[in-house]
Structures are given as structure tokens and as C-alpha cells.
Length: 404
Ligand code: UDP
Image (cartoon, rainbow, N blue to C red; front, top):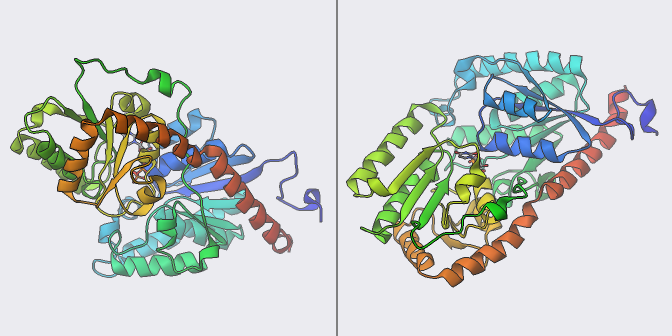
């Protein structure tokens, strides 16, 4: 069987056409991870189909990626995961999602991509359904742990069932995410989200003088489960009345609860008397500039993080990492070798590690050096190679069926 006689099949000169489906158009973690993956896939001609307009559209287009917006009704697109399953599955959302899947299937039939690759949880559901309706092989890229500490139990069960039957293949962003599936191990491929630092990252690293404050930093969406409050309280305990400062990079992104939590954090800083040593930076595009100011990086998620790109970013930027154990961080960091781990939510343990690392420059430099080597494991090349192998297998197994 030769490639060139098959309709829609990539020839050596023709790139594979892949439609990437996501419902979010903000620069949040999963979407940043998608942009990085697409950037690494040199043999793919990508088209991203989003369910809303937003900053991601412009940033993808600026990197030469084709983007289409196929709008979804706001009530369904913005339905928060914590509301799904609180009183059964919302009927309106089911109707909207099914109707959207049919619209997307029509669009896919017109576009005739070789493959569909879904990127968000919602897109996994409607994108996989649409791809099936359009007769296009589909990869469901799961970036969330399907567990009751993250989603409500009924939603966990429904999504686990759908991911077991809808897509042709599943990609997960960590072993921790894979462990939440019903699938046999071999059915889901772990592809760690790729991170690479700009070439001048090490050069840009600020050389701290005696007069500069010691900076403890955190990067991430402002939302309770990310544990910004854990860092602030641990900081207040570790350095009462000290000269150290804490920099919190990130903003609330989804819904009123996150905005309320951001306000709570400011209130807490005042209560603990550290308000003048806490710098809330808001959302920053240039994460590498932010990391270059930090002396210690803290990751404080309360529930196991599915992966945690920010940890790899800090490691590549040469900032010693303290992370909460469990989930992706335990796969990225080897405790006491290239970072330090503490039990999630344990404020005393975090405060103790902060003091220890603050006082031990040799340990900081050991962790920094080992972390740079470790972080290479999460390279764009590694992710691209795994994904291209999967695409190849999927196309090889689906071409005969698609000719009929
Ligand atoms: N990020 C950013 N600016 C900010 C806060 C976060 O660019 O102000 C980026 C961060 O650098 C990382 C991503 O958002 O690349 C967050 O991804 P991660 O996997 O750590 O967490 P998620 O948001 O997916 O849970």
C-alpha cells in the first residue's frame, strides 16, 4: 500500500493535517501546553478549532498556526467543572454539547483533516464525538486527573466511560493522570508537556547582590487548589519580620470564585503582616523574566497536579524548586536531588523547607545544577517524537477503513 494512492493520506512531501480542538481561547496551562506541542511538531500542518475568541487566537496566529473559532453557547462553554454532577448532568449543557458536536462534525467533513486531536476535557467529549461522526481518527489528550478530588464523582464516571469508548487513542500528560483512567495501561500514552527555555535564559539570570531582597516566587493561575494561601502562610511563619519577599505571578482566570480567592489572598497578607513583602504580579506573558528574579520557586498545589509545567520552567530557569508531592510534580522532581518535595498542604513542612533552603546556598546550587539536567527530559523533541509515532500508528491502522 503506498501513501500517494490514498485519499487524505500524507505523502512524504505532504504534512499530516491535524485539527486540534479546544473550548478555551485563554492562555491557561493546557492551552500553553498545546501551543508548545504544535510548535514542536514540524511535520504537522495544524488547524486549531476553538469554541470562543480570546488571546490564544492571536498568539497562535502570530506563530503561523491556522485558527478557526466555531462558537459554543456561553452557558455550556463556561460551565464550571465543579457544577457538573452537582445535581446530575445539566440537561441544557448536554443538548448544547451534542448540537455542537454535530456542527463540528460538519466542519470536519469539509476540512478533511487526517486526524483530530482534542486538548481540553470538554473538547475531549465533543471533539471525539464529532470526529467519530465525521469518520476521522481521534486522539483525546487528557490533561486533567479524572478523580473525585478534581471533578465531581458522577462527572468522573461519565468522562472515564467516554474516554474508554470514544477516541482511537489517548494521550495523558503524566503517569498520575493515566492512573485515573479505566483503560489498561498500554492504551494511553504518556507524553509529558514539553517545555524549553529561550536561549538567553541562563544569561538573563539576575546576579543577586547583597542589597537585593531574597525572592521566593510562585507562578500559576490564582485558584484555591493551586495553594497560593499555603505559600503565603508558610512564608509568614518562616520569615516573620524578615527582608525576604514573595512574588505571586498569575491571575484568576475562570469565574467569580477565583476572583474572590485573589481578594482573600490580599486580605490574608494584611492579616499576617506581610502585605508590604508580597508582590502580586498578575498574569505575566514573559514568565522567564519573572523567574529570573526568583531565588526559590514554590509549587503549592493542594490536590495532585496532573503535570505542572511551571515546575519544569523553574528548573530550566535555574531556580531551586520546592514542590508539593504527588501527581506530576513527583514524576518531575526527585526529592533532595533536583528539588525538594513536601506533603501537599503541609504549611509547617513548607515553612521549614523555605528556611532550610534560604540558609543553605550550597543546597540551592546543587538542586539548581541537577534540575537543569533533569528538565531536559521534558524537551519538545521528546514530546514530538512520541506524538508523531502515535499519529503514524493511528493513520496506518485507519487508512484502509477510511478508503471505503
Ligand atoms: N503562566 C503564565 N503567566 C502567568 C501564570 C502562568 O504564562 O502569569 C503559565 C505558566 O508559565 C505555565 C502555565 O501558565 O506555562 C501553567 O501551566 P501548568 O501546567 O503549570 O498549570 P495549569 O494551569 O495547566 O494547571
